[in-house]
Length: 154
Image 1 (cartoon, rainbow, N blue to C red):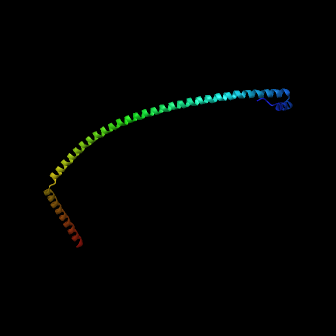
Image 2: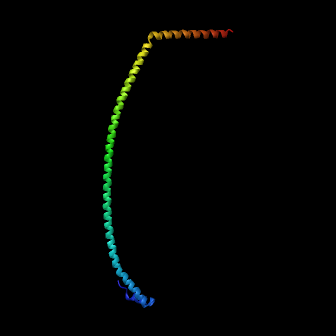
Image 3: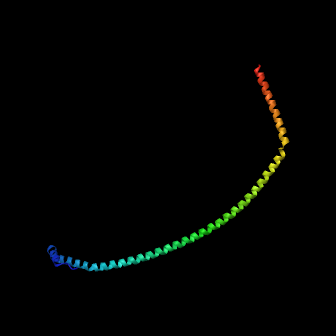
């Protein structure tokens, strides 16, 4: 857009003819550059759009790679957990067998001890021990009674 004659005249009055002409040519040069700037802006927008598209494509590729790797890790973990589960079940079965064997041995020992106790403690033995103990209690009571009477009459 060229500079209007009225503005050019006012500039000549204020700055002088040479300065006004120089300023006018600068303004007209800027007007010519506006088209270039507009074209450059359009090219930059296209460039940014292409960059944005490439960036989005690369982000999608990375997301795909991450999803693929996560699926691989998940599959590996599932496999290892299954192996661990099998190993644990095997070990638990071994422990059950070992515990059953030990409980059987312990039960046999307890049964043997019960048999020994049954052999040691019979009815006759208990009666004899009880008779001896009762005699000792009567003797102790007699001594206590005699000492109490002796202290009373002293």
